[in-house]
Image 1 (cartoon, rainbow, N blue to C red):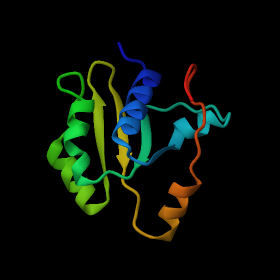
Image 2: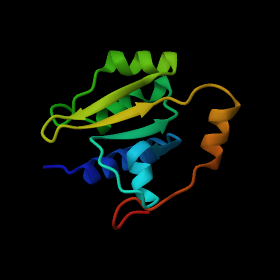
Image 3: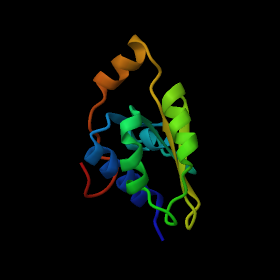
Amino acid sequence: MMEQSDILRHAADALERMAVPHFVVGSMASIAYGEARFTQDIDIVAAFEPRHLPDLMTAFPRPEFFLNIDAERDAIRTGFQFNVIHPMSGNKIDFILPHPGAWATTQMVRRRPVRLLRNAT
């Protein structure tokens, strides 16, 4: 069974392959900075574009993952969020689209790699 750390690594690797600018937020980011928190999901801000949809479907194939292509398409169009679920473990990734504007641009520019997982960069 995939652990939450495996799913995070899978998502990060997929986003890197797709060249989607992204950063981890929420509880997982808090844990990386030493503040232990219990979390049931993974939150990732990702600058998806409509052209990324086919690669997203490939990166999170059924039946291993559940995702709703219509919800993804709508989230990308409206700049909201969508999720991907790993049914076997019950783990969920919330992909949050960055809001338009200077603040979101600054956040994306200021992101930096942080080792969240063992044997990862």
